[in-house]
Image (cartoon, rainbow, N blue to C red; front, side):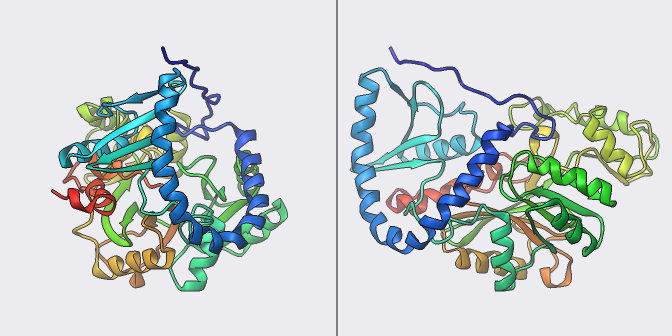
Length: 406
C-alpha cells in the first residue's frame, strides 16, 4: 500500500484567488532565487553543454527509481489521466493515447506533482509539467521574471507596457508620477493575477497597491495599464502553435435587463458548472469594485450591445472566458510572436499579449507583452469556452516523438 500524505493548501486569500500561495514562503523563495541566480547564471553556458548528457541520465535512471519507489509503497504510478485536475495533463494524455504513446504520472506519497513518464516504442521521456527536448534552455533562468523580461524586450525592440521595477515605496511613487494613468501594480514574478491592483489613479491607491504586491514578492512592477483582451500566444519549437483570446467575466446589454439578470442568464451555460469554467459572481467585492470603476452597479441596465466587466482578471476561476483567435491574428503579430520565440530560444513558451484588436498590426496599436511563461497551460487551447480547439499538445508530441505523428 502506498504511503499517502495530506495535500497542503495555503490559507484562502481574496488577492490570490484560486491560484493561492503561502505569502511568506513565496516572498522568501523569490529572494532566495534571486540570490542563487547571481551564482548560477554565469554557469548557464556550462549547464547547456552538459545537460544533454544529464537528460539521457534522467530518462534512463528515473524510470528505474520510480519502479523502486512504487514497489516500496512510496509512490504510485497513475495510468489514466483523463480526469486529472490539470487541463494541460489531460490534453497531453489524450493526444498521447491517440498516437500510441503511453503517458503516466508518478505521484510521490500519493500527491500529484505533475511528474510524468512518456513511453513510445523503445524510448522513455521523463518530464515535469511539459516535455521539452532539452531541460536547460537559454531563457529559462529569466523568462518568468517580469522585470527582467521587460528590460530585455525593451532592448530588443519588442512592445511592452511603460513602467519599471520598484524595490521601495519611494521608487514606486516616482515611477507612478512619470506614467500616464491608469496604472497597474503587480508582483515582479508569479502568475494568475495574484496581488495585482488595476485602475490606479491616485498616489494613495498606488501606495496601498505597492504593499499589497509586496505580500508575495520582494519587488513590484509599476506600469501603465494596457486596455484590451489578454491574448495567450503559445510557441512550440519557436513557431506559433495557437493564439487564445481570454476575456474577463462580462455581460452584454440588451436595453431591458439589469447586469444581475444578464449574469444570471449567462450562468445558465452548462460549461460554467466546472470543472474548467466558473459562474460569474455579481456581488463579490471584486465584482462590485470593477462595476464601480465603470460607474455601474448590479442593478444597472446596459444599453443594447454595451459591455460590463465584472472582474479585472481573465482567469477562468473568476468567470473569465476564452476562444481561439489564431486565424484572426494579423500576420505582423504572428511575426512578432515568432521573433520573440527565436529571441527566447526555448522549445515551449507562452506570451501574454494585450491589444485592443488582434486582427490589426501591433505597430498601429497601443499594446505590449505583459508576461512570459516557461510552463504555459497549453490545455487552455484544448478547452475553450467557445470556438474551435487548437491542438497544441499535438505540436508538443511532434517535437518529442516525431515518429508517433498521426
